[in-house]
Length: 412
Ligand SMILES: *[C@@H]1O[C@H](CO)[C@@H](O)[C@H](O)[C@H]1NC(C)=O
Ligand SMILES: *[C@@H]1O[C@H](CO)[C@@H](O)[C@H](O)[C@H]1NC(C)=O
Ligand SMILES: *[C@@H]1O[C@H](CO)[C@@H](O)[C@H](O)[C@H]1NC(C)=O
Image (cartoon, rainbow, N blue to C red; front, side, top):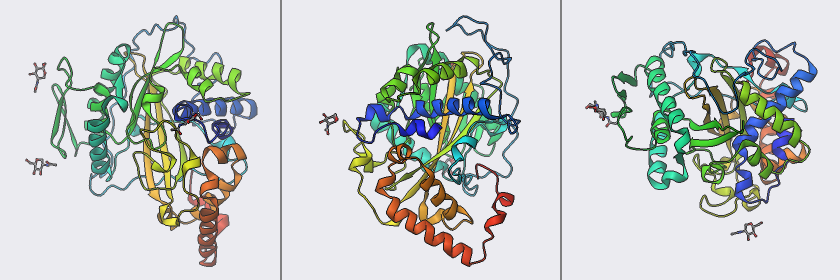
């Protein structure tokens, strides 16, 4: 259902509509929540009750007025044996066998220790981000005045969390944080800050970051962001927009009334103590992490899967997966969205047991609208033939397809 929603975006529309990506991802959570409520709660134990009317998080406050919560994030335990040069990225492979994968995909509660994931790609991501902050500035990193407090609170949260979780790379200082690997020190008490606080926050982690702020009309607006490695969408197209407005510009017929309401409830009820996670994935037909040039120039007016070259060599196919977290900041009430991208050549992930067979099945199970949204037409011939062949090799090599559920647990 969530993917059907995303898939209703036609492939040949201007980028500003494709930029609804972030928000559609959020909408997707709601649709999932709604469908789960309708079906069953047998498997709900790991998910928060955000979607339930009358849940204990139901606010009594007037819209747009946040009373600072006294919630404090529990201190994080150090990531076991973490090392910036040797800790490998977590191999999320969040695709499912069709056709019902969309029903079981969705929200799960986040453990506070696991808010931010860093690994041995840190220095590459850090370098790419620094270059893009320099080259693109406010096109990629921006904070509206009314989101400044939330952006600073995010920075403070990172300055507290990262030294707890990754002590071999970060040290807390009286005025902020030092990265002992890159030798950067950030004084976050300085005023004015030397750069946009979202840019500083982005330099600390591998994630893209966005903050939604509730205005007195009760709507959430995208008012701070550091969107540096998102591949398919630009902050400058969506900055300042209301969630429902972005949603409308994405032209999602039929879902509008339900989604608008669900989306608003989701955000309004989100409590600082209820952080959540979800994963998703895309196929990309070039090897650029920051921006996928296959869908058009980042500075062009329009981007579209239509411009992508069809049936490129399999070596040009990349697996882009996202791990997204959503939490509310206790002091400012801003809602922080982190988007961590993992980017791997297809020719690498097919070496993993079950992956080629399951990915091929997932891609085949997308509805037409999802297929259009995810550009399937441009790569399915080459990719599916390759995945089928690799799956066959695995089975012939003795892979027991019946055992899969025993050896893995979503989203791996
Ligand atoms: C950081 O400083 C240390 C000690 O001065 C030095 O050995 C190291 O090369 C520096 N790292 C970078 C990335 O500049
Ligand atoms: C950080 O900034 C504050 C405010 O400008 C200043 O008083 C302080 O000396 C700075 N600290 C460091 C370590 O640079
Ligand atoms: C962008 O899309 C619009 C509407 O589809 C079209 O009119 C315009 O010519 C396109 N611009 C470019 C540069 O392709």
